[in-house]
Image (tube, rainbow, N blue to C red):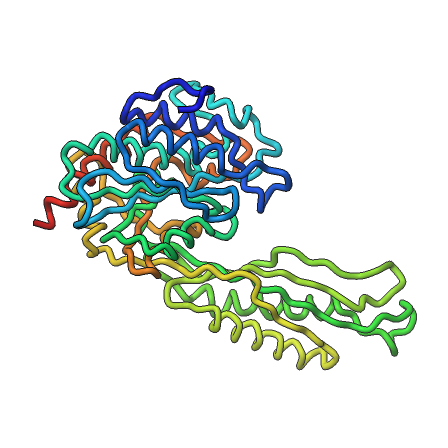
Length: 389
């Protein structure tokens, strides 16, 4: 335990949550000069070691370690609880971001809902279940989920295995077996600079970008709005940023448009690039001088686990046994569950907190939700191995 934190009783989810919210773990890939996850990872590792876990720190990124903590008999079946410990910027927040203030049954602070509440609940649940476990719970507190997910990627590269995983993102106690993916596409338009009076010489790169945007809007309306998933709704795209131009009286010779395309299970980056290429070709029919280069910048794949999967059924049973409603929903945001699924570990989302409060100016989590999720995950941890006998 660090000198700055008192001892946290074993299985105390709320105490652990307040302790880790107090640690500034802003992701330095998102916020220049941010401290990263090292301090919170070390704190979490110390607490879990004091609770009886077998703990290791894994350098996912230099100076930014994952926490891998195991409890229960090893060598047989394993169930993973996964959550990220990095948070986003705090600019504009209504409450002090790292005070972990408790008021009216809520804990306020950056990361309280996204997703230190889930991290605290999964750690406490594993600790509470420890004496009844017939297999191993692997608790993974990972770095960098808010940017490039280098933490969970490092876990997978290391060969970590489990029969299933719960990613404790905020779902308000709903089971989230599916979420969208995304592709970031950059479109670079090249025009021809000329004096504003010389329409015979100039080629307007910004107008060309507008023509492609028009085609992408048509794609959304005529195609993507009709391409749906039972839990996730329809596929979508939106313009994210646009830059270009040099002055009032100059034809712009360059424009850069960045577009995000949210994908459904079954869609691939190749599909997205084909759609965008076709949109550009249609725009070129109207503007023969259009010159554009498409570059895929970052892609994260969708995630989809069947409602009949053992992990969904086991979690549903645990919810019912604890007197909670069983609700299955799609998760709006991308999560590390997709990476785990792609690696052969069926992963679903389930946790306390509201995704609508993630990254918000006022972020908080209901204390009661943290406790309820802890109880459900404790039961799941105990029952998961018994059901396999």
